[in-house]
Length: 592
Image 1 (cartoon, rainbow, N blue to C red):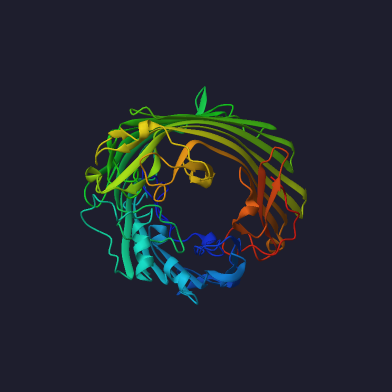
Image 2: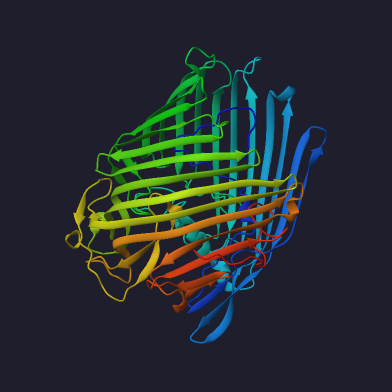
């Protein structure tokens, strides 16, 4: 929800739920498929119709209404030579309404937001995977505290209501945004018989708008049952968060700089049971030199505290103190050659560390053409990378489950290439490509000894036991969940391989992502849009598994297989945003 009034909405470890995210409309089908040897799944959901209305009502109220309906989507599956179809997305209606009004020349403001998601199920399978109905309503506003409008108070509150089958509502409660199955929870427990779920959230901010002295403070909460993921994004819940920040800025140029600033903050969070979750302090600053070069350093420190995410729904873990920081610098962006550089680091008392280097250059050979290349190099050593958990009645200290971790050494090299070219006043081309190579090594397997500690016992001597024929691939999500690292999995000694999957010594990824947009200016409906990604995997894709439209497999001379997946967009039917859904391919498939 976009609130007026304040010019600073900083957050420190604040999850900031999003109430409306337009790519939810026309997204990839969400329903899990039944067992199959082969599946052809649509890469997106067709939008049957959509309309948007904006304007003013009652004189001073700004109003916006969006309504969209997406189609029922089916997947073709094959099991043992028998072909059939399965519903992977039901017929769905999406509605968004937003109204806002200002008073006394903008000194005060008041707004409302509501969203609704309604699904019609024709098969039993989607009904257990998706919410039947999801509603969200919110109220926001602001008021200045003085005539000079130097101080402002802003705030919002929201309520979510979900309904569905008992299996679906249980899945929401135990999902990664909620983790209500955590054994440390004293309240807000999983109700496996519930067919509805109601949650609430809010945030209130005090901000100093003007002057060289800066001030910002905020208090926010997201209760354990709040969920906006049908039409928005809720990354985590069960958090009460606050911060206080102050700083100073120099806006008058002197002999060596044009402007500068420095800011510091204290922040902290608790869950709804009162457990302190990752408090800390941070500071940053910046300077713009007379030649328009810039330099922006930053640093943060987190003392030892509890972590409620490390065991993925298991007991709390007391993680050691850690710090992180880095800097950003660049040259004058108006020049023909523009250079920039970023360095990040993080280090924990447990021995974990990360470091990344991100240089780049933008070349502007002509006013209508720019090319940007920015390579990156990341080194990552995780002292307690999550592996998984399994039931063990003998693990009484950890509530009847064993929570297994490993050390991970990972190196990632990638690059981003961007091209913007205006052929003529009426036509432009945008190209984005990102090749990536990542290699990781797992070792030192261990299991959590007891809750609220950072103590571990070795598993199988810390060495994984290779088992031939298991050749399983899953996404191992480390520092960047979006990387989608494919890891070869073997059983960890002492764990039931049927209940637990864990990576062996390596997790490697090679990938290319790309996006191409050709658009006549002034005619957005005629835009042509192609995006996708290619992977190199050590498995023959034709042997089975899910393959969506546009997925192709090639075998190279080295025996590896290349998979490329593309999502073409034709006018008025696809692309990011509200009016988006993949359409029939009219492009040449690009091989990774």
